Amino acid sequence: MITFFQVIILGIVQGFTELFPISSLGHSVIIPSLLGWNIHQSDPYFIVLLVSTHTATALVLLYFFRKDWLKIVKGMLRSLKNRSIDKDDSYAKLGWLLVVGTIPAGILGLLFQNSLQSLFASAQLAAFFLMVNGVILYSAQRLRKRPHMEAKTSSDKKIAKLSWTQAIFVGTAQAGALIPGISRSGSSMAGGLLAGLNNEDAARFSFLLATPIIAAAAILKLPDLLGSSANDFRTQALVGALFAGVSAYLSVRFLLRFFKSNTLTPFAIYCFTAGLFLSIYFLFR
Image (cartoon, rainbow, N blue to C red; front, top):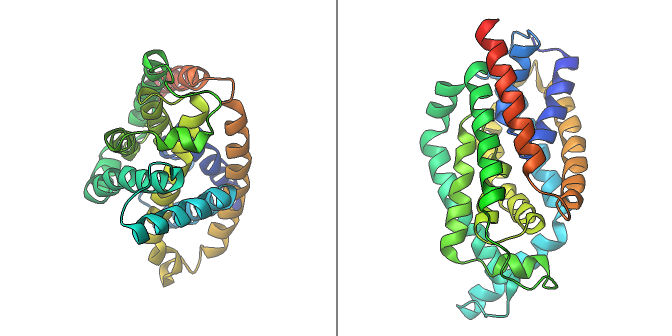
């Protein structure tokens, strides 16, 4: 069985890498192999751990953006009542953009999650796709459109000016995270940059967009956490969730401040460099 020490390490890594654009799934595959732990992604207790840590991350995101979500829900209810979205109702538009952006990743996840993750769930391949993730981040930063909205405009209003097509594009980009090594937050941030958002707004949109996706993934697997098969591991899973929650909270606070004046480039360099060295290491190990 997985130990409490391993659970704590994996919980911290999950909460940290789920929001940093460096692939939580890739690191959850690489770290056990790198440290020589006999843990595999398909193990029942590992799936239970992922469910608990994803649930904790989703709850942290909901809490952190609780004021925004309250405004978004009220805006969506207004639009349903009026049967239209007022052009000045930024939160109604933002809410429906999140719905539109969530649909592609949700559909692709239901169709291909198990097949893709089992196909690519090796440390060697995860390290390779970590390099690919670095190239994606760097390319998006270099190719990004210059923000076309007023700098003094609030972040949520700028995000709400995205088109429906752009929201679908950003949402679809998240589906790359089905492959270990490709980051969900990194892909959606990259999509936001290419759609004309600045780094701070792209990160904010990514975190808002990630909340329903992570929550849905956790809910779908919730029977694994509540079922009898998890009886011998539920305590460890809750410990992992606690550390994942703390890690996720610190991560989102740091990243929102970081992207006020910084770019994706440092994460691109990390992913490419770490992926390259790990690929060589696993090749000759």
